[in-house]
Length: 291
Image (cartoon, helix red, strand yellow):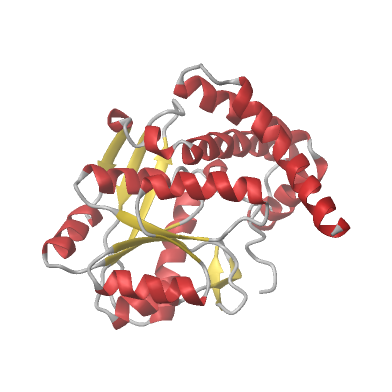
């Protein structure tokens, strides 16, 4: 009982800074609230040692020639980006109404619409880059709906806000694991669209190159695409320089071959995006651990 009480208290204390930041900005405009949370997270990423050390370890792995001053600036920029992303996810219903902020390009959207017109499902693959919820917002603008797979947060306060936000962005929302996988298959076979973020470490995954280093990567998206003859479409919500608008890019569907080749193609796609704008990726995922 005491252990449960202590755990609950620790979770509440960890959530308190975010709750305070969100509460203090109530009544302000969407963009101002987003920017303020971004600035707060950017400050933490630059000056809070545990987060900064993990960030620097991963960045130096990929960009060994980057100077310390550049890394510190990048940490702050990434924090701002992720703070804004978190705010937008928590307020997805309002975020999706800001249709003038989304600028769409790439051949993948037409491929998605063709699949839907034929009664087929589709798999959207992306990563923790830019604002991935902008992809589902654009899909909804075009009269479709995309569910998503997510990894539950162990902190009940973050979990409650996270789940409420992404559920507002489209259904169904499925947790990783056996039960979620069964529901995912049913949804795809019935013609549904699912968005999957493939850049998290997957302990049972294959060690595949990612940003020049092997990373344990799930092959499940490619396996499902092959098994059920579905398009697997890389898509990204790239935050523009103004911080408030997005270029939402739907790339060409990955050519069907085998699950390893297809997943490597996605890793290459995301790696290219990150190398072009590294501050838009979330560097704290421990992506290469265990590989």
